[in-house]
Image (tube, rainbow, N blue to C red; front, side, top):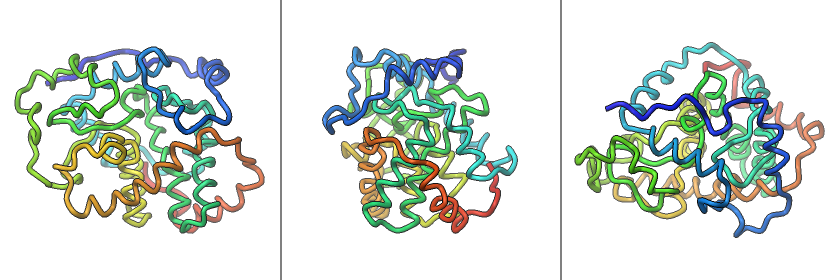
Length: 285
């Protein structure tokens, strides 16, 4: 099966983003205001998920995993990729309008202030670097947004589940049973989640970070599981144990988005040392 095609992202041109930032940035939001996914709350977010759910077929996901697993796009530093993200605002996210590098520092600074290990702070800093997929010409619906398994029934805990009616996989009976193509408690490593920046940054960094950090990076957008408890029938005991770390990470990713903007110049020496501790000067992307 092939995915439903589209030639545009919700915001098609990079130069539209500055205007979008000005309309979306909000300071000091209450916790209950986050992740507002009513269809009328933000038309850009709604349109993003319409495209995402229509196009993320199992066939598409498998092709993208194979395409990017080779890490054959050259070697670059963490900082080179972070610099690119300064131009990016995430259409799928109703909560933040700061640049991505500021969001990364908001997240990691909140983790650091709570006294967590250095690898945990680093996971906060690099967790969204997989969004450099946009640099390779990938549409935003194939880069960002909440993730979900393909090849089995869609949970009603996925945001905007009604949009899956346009996905060709919804017409494949085998893919619409509880376990689909998988077996009970087979483990998330055997599950094909919707393609995006989580899987990509996990693939890029997995040889450099401890396993709890790997889980944080790979599953931080898997909200149906770590926030709502869906798909536990596919998880094994090790997944359950590691998801304790994913849940520890999630509040920093989510609720740091309303915090004041970080003083990048002041804190940069700490992060330069931190990145150098775990990563070589350049890594394969």
